[in-house]
View 1: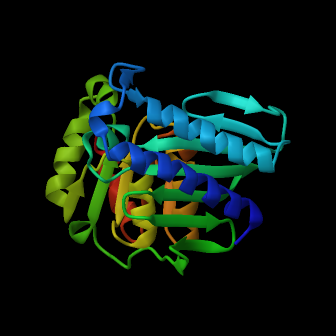
View 2: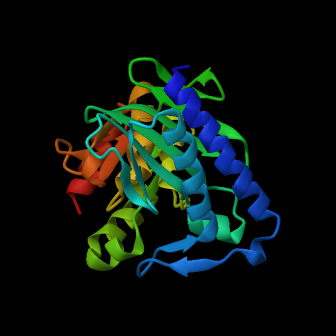
Length: 259
């Protein structure tokens, strides 16, 4: 494993220890709001600070972009860590064990390494550009599903996006009928990791942030999947994207085009 990815694993596991301790007494977790439908906890903030401490101690010349603290470190550095300390905070607060620590490393504008860690299950998903994607050190491949009608999908479309564009509600309802199944898990990072692992066959996300998707999109590509924006040809790192197996992707693009 690349030394920088190894350091990211160390940082993720340190954050996971904070998360698992907090889960022992969830009633004591202080919860606040940072938007109309976004919550944040003191644990998110503590985890991000711990991750930042470990990464920048090892690589003081790197930049750091965190969901909670923004951009820090050497802002002109060619290396930039992109971190979501808890993707799926609402799940975390409710004790639903589906949330993840997400760390990606961008070098010269390209995501080169990615990590998604679920501390509840101790599953750690990793990927490095050109070197494949792994779940607990075992190589991952996307599923061989051929038809949208048989595909198990997930979507991550925040409520604010659904309110602003009701056709997205129609899209989700239509896919519940046209696909083999649809899930709304509350963690876009784990959804992408599950596409890479072959647990899901496709994913649609709208209005997501770079820290939600940076690690996951690399995993999907390294596991043999495809990523595109909603039109099938634009910039998916803008936060609206489709990820799927090669045979399922065209059908998903067609469904989105109908919306």
